[in-house]
Figure 1: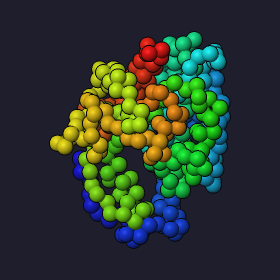
Figure 2: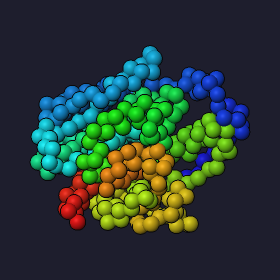
Figure 3: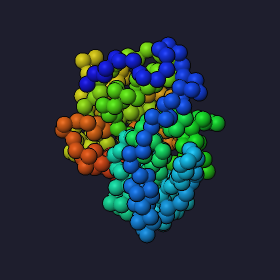
Figure 4: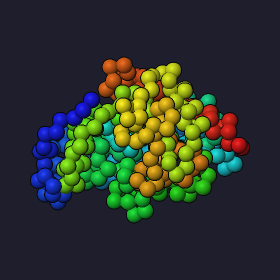
Amino acid sequence: MTATTAQYPIGTPGVPWGDAERAQWLSRQVRHRSYHDDVVRTLERLSERFGVAEYGQLHYPPDHYRLFAVRNRDWRDRLPIVLVTGGVHGYETSGVHGALQFVDRRAADYAGRVNLLVAPCVSPWAYERIHRWNANAIDPNRSFRENSAAEESAALIRLIAPLRDRILMHIDLHETTDTDETEFRPALAARDGKPFEPGLIPDGFYLVDDSANPQPAFQRAIIEAVRKVTHIAPADANGQILQANVVAPGVIQYPVQQLGLCAGITGARYTTTTEVYPDSPRATPEQCNEAQVVAVCAAIDFVLANANN
């Protein structure tokens, strides 16, 4: 789909936002769902089988959030670590629920084979408000850098810091939605004082590989597994998805560390970012969640089969 070109209702065209505009934007944000009910309660149930620990806290007065990560209980130092992250963008629902569903239904399959570390909801404030940014109008998925301005990103960096050299694979679970074009990209352009250029939303699942460390066989294995669950996004007329060249069916590449993306925080050999399209008439919420679970399993299966290659 293409987006409207109407002016964003906050700010002056061509002028970056200041404190007043950010405060106006924040005043418009509404809580639509509960992090505690949807995520924390699920983690409490999972804690009967897995290790669940707090790794940070977020303070957005009057709101306060505790951040949690899940580990397998039979953690063994000799095993490689697999990192799964979801909800870096809080509005991308299947990233959160796909990560939780993976832990609940499939994580036990990998007991004694890898150490699993899962951060299912990196941005709970944004999850509740179905938003891309945090309360300071900062995109956490452009903020995975040293001295990050996004506490969501900084907390996750601190979590993985002691383990970084042992992480073999990192899969970051995302969605691309129609609201990217109708709300979030127009808001980004307004915030930064830049013109908004409408684009196309790809219909289907795709992956973002790291252009600085491409792993085509790894990406291909995930695509082929997910293809059995939901459709793969085709390239547009220019052979691209979101203005990035399609290097293989359903695969594009970004310089993930350079852009401050979550997939770049570990320096792992195998990394990918999943993208499902929940607004497609050809996909249900259940399919989107399942696509995320299948992607995680396919990624782990591949690295276990090829870790010594």
